[in-house]
Image (cartoon, rainbow, N blue to C red):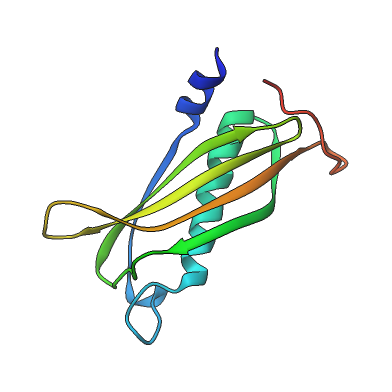
Length: 128
């Protein structure tokens, strides 16, 4: 399988509803909750790509372009963007969908870097 095919097969999409227990006093999604969901979705994509033990080592610039109100549906989309020797970078986007209207809008974008590790938690080569 080519690298491009592995990247395509590892793309991960998760849908969630923004309920009141995940919102702040402005009735919008907590930023920390969004980052948690992004890291989780990125981890799944990284693991599906490598089929190895992966750990998050950094998150890069996370842009909060639009607030996410309670009562909306969101879609998290994670795609492997770069593969190195022991690490890979996953780009994650969160889109907003109104429950009773068509269309969607990009709300948040960020990148997460993962390292493949062995059973002793030492970095290992990503199998390509």
